[in-house]
Image (cartoon, rainbow, N blue to C red; front, side):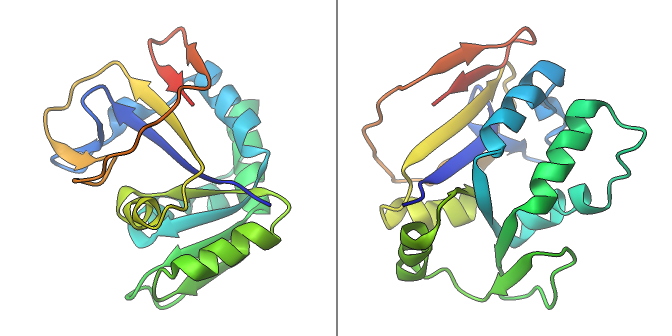
Length: 180
């Protein structure tokens, strides 16, 4: 049975983007990216909301021949995985191995977890909020950047209280901290 993992890069004050929608402060360096690649190799399916999918879809067309090896590796990992995009407005997927679902159905995700041999990640806080509320999230993989942005898009849904157990932590040379 697959695990459903919420993975996010967030500011120290808990945002994935600032009030202007910017997340340039969250770009991982080579050390962090290589670590992310190791985590993502275990993922067979990405669950995305429309906005997160549109950001991530750039990995499909990225020319990797002139990129560092860790960037090219992530592009290949991302391209090989299945993607499910939850959107009421997106007409067509722009990437291969992608299907669109009009609504998030917790029971369908439970069935996906039960039938998948590889783990799944969920990206985007709005979609993740639905999975948190349905009790579907098995793990959180959080990368905390050493920056305060003051306001913006919260990494977690409001009103959610969960008791979590720290399983792993790692500090990187750029000051980012990984919490699992």
